[in-house]
Amino acid sequence: MAAAQTKQRRFRSVSLFWLIPNIITVAGLISGLTALRFALDGQWSMVIGLITLAAVFDALDGRAARRFKTSSKFGAALDSLSDMVVFGVVPSLCLYLWALQDSGNLAWWATMFYAVAIALRLARFDSELREPDEKLKDFFTGVPAPAAAFLVLTPICVDLELGIAWAREATYVGAWLVIIGGLAVSSIPTFAGKRLKLPAVAVLPVLAGGSILIAGIFMQPWITYLTLATAYVASIPWAIIKFNQSPGADQ
Image (cartoon, rainbow, N blue to C red):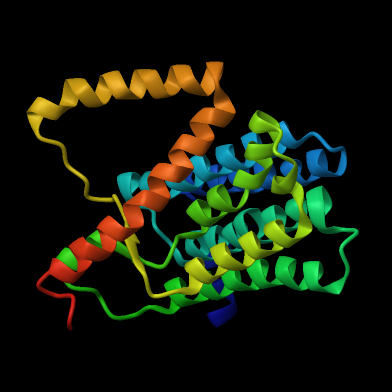
């Protein structure tokens, strides 16, 4: 009887809506792994584009799961494993291939530090059981993995756009890996943006700004990338101030 029930559970049907978020997650994983292939070929613009695309997929899969009410332990585990590979292992190895592979053990240590930091950040996120205060749901603890990957690749953008020689120096690249990895595992609050709502008067200006951003992505992609990275870093002090002003901050 027990065997029959097990067999019945094993072969039960799965909703197409359950598959959609997981397909998006797998698409992000494929994008990240393909970025590593282009890194091996030295095509750095493709590396940045594919990891950025993976971050877009990462933003969509959770929203699709919530939209279709198909969140599951399987999806959460797949998402975390994908994030570890795409935003932890791949960016660190790409920077190692780009600037650090001839710089000895210390450069490899910096590479591994970033990857391990992302793993620890994801483990902390997954193991957090206590529901935060309602107002504190507007914040992450530390820099999220996709944002960390976005930031850690900025030296490549500086080199592609500005041609500054020191951006590829092993000392600076290694230090940058350690700094971003440290921010990922820190307790610094950063904006989550999940419940961001705009007043009606701000809709048209935001749409206009979005159109400028899209045009910038096509016309000046690296300048746009660096502008977004700078804006994100500049938002961190503001997030700390807003977090400290939240009523639940001291709980």
